[in-house]
Length: 98
Length: 98
Image (tube, rainbow over the protein chains, first blue to last red):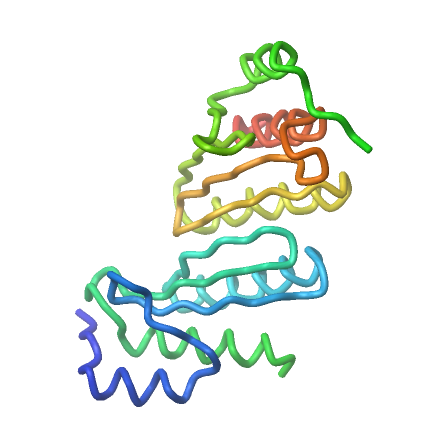
């Protein structure tokens, strides 16, 4: 079973990500994304979906038109693990157009 | 500009849909969907996304793993219009495997 990051590891890792914030009242992180339109937003979601499936680690996410909000947490560990950080890093890269 | 359905039209149309409910505090309707897994859930979302783009009428939606919640409303009309009903009907059909 995968283990939660320690508070220190967690803070260090999150600081290296791009704009992820702690979710109030939950051990989870979230980030909001704004795209040009729905095509771009859903294209981004599709890239994340394929990666998530490959990692067997899935986001919680909300979309309306060009806006996407993604929440990451590892349910099995009841908190943030290395898997969340890896998925967040991938998401940051494609959001930045890399 | 597209017009809101009257209360009577709205009630009649919603009654013909499959499991859509009024959203409390908003002039919108929502339905929850449960799939076998993420692949099936996101495949469903992709079919809805393509239809939504074709109609130029987009859902608000939330997904976590095999669960999808869709909210429909027409922002331009500040309520439920024929467009929401048409999109809901399409969603019901593909959710039923038609």
